[in-house]
Image (cartoon, rainbow, N blue to C red):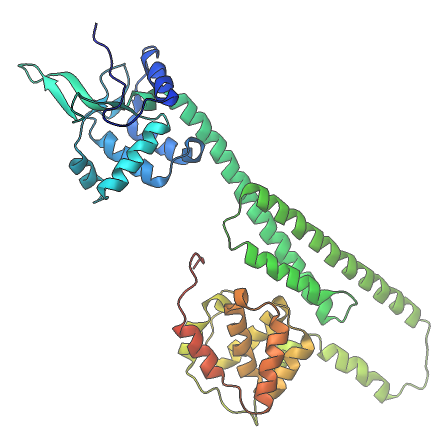
Length: 400
């Protein structure tokens, strides 16, 4: 009776894992046929459960390409025996040392088995008709034996990925609600720690740029939900107080109404969106923007993602900056001081630049005030800030 060789050649030791994998392959009943490429795609989804990476998946794909049939199964001989050179070519020129490491990982994961020859070479003995009598190389049968396990792990991975996607969606929606409601409360002058809340939400924005685990994302979701509850609490209290004031004011009558009494109300109604109005004001008395619009747009791609439409002028950038300033925690007073010192267009460009560097700036409001002080004494150059952004290398891992 011919025995299946499972002990490794050379100095590689025998391990309990190899024994277990060999026993599992030898004791398997007649196996159904499975599409090898479909099985590989399923394993790609479940690779984390088997402790392998996409590089090992690539090496396994190369090994499967040496199996002549599309289907695996029927307990037929599934030993492939390509040389390292042939494997390296099908792995797109992978270094031999890297190839050996990934092959060892696949063996350790119990997805393939080694059947080493007496001299460690991979080859096959054939009969007079060219049929393979015995092959020495890598046995793919463990992959087929574990097909049900791979399928189950892929389903678990799919459910986890869907949960991750749902959580990211929930965090994004709650964060947006909290930001816009906090901006509303701030602009309406309601009492509340708006700047602190906006800074906390900005920290969440930074955190969401990372690849978070499911547990980390669940913590972030709870935190954002708490922030939204705080924002809604302060908004609700402020709106309730405002409603009570309106009710009490209805009892006040003055038959001798003077037109001057109506002017404050008129001014208040005109100041509903102060930031946008200031951004649309002309910049008479202020120097023109000393840099082409195209260069500015090239420097602030992240700010442009928040634009409601196309940016065709510096006035559009000014309006965009007015919108962004509250989102990154800049108070109305800091924004107004910047507009007074720089002009609305330069102030808007500056805020867009601050958003582009938001990962490096802990307190954008304080940073803008420092730039405003420089502008007041004529030492601030927005062109230098824009050119510094253009010349700086892109941040690794940031999504475009």
